[in-house]
Length: 86
Image (cartoon, rainbow, N blue to C red):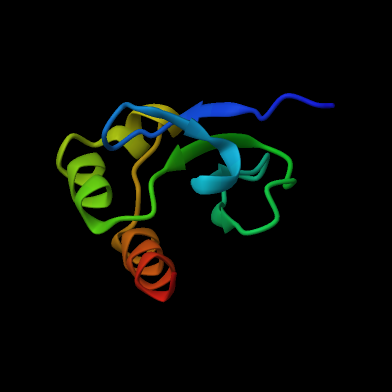
């Protein structure tokens, strides 16, 4: 029996099961994507599936700090679309 992996949301800073969070990845080319499979290579950050966590992460620039780069507004718009779908 394998353990369920825990990850911390960058928006609310709470630990949750990895499968309950949305993963955002910065690949080796510096491209930031939403990882639906959870298996893409690169630096990952996790966020809860709610708008409040996304807005908090954006306000406090948590993604920029995690990836050490400027985050385009399109990334946040894509995340809003993914969150509203679920």
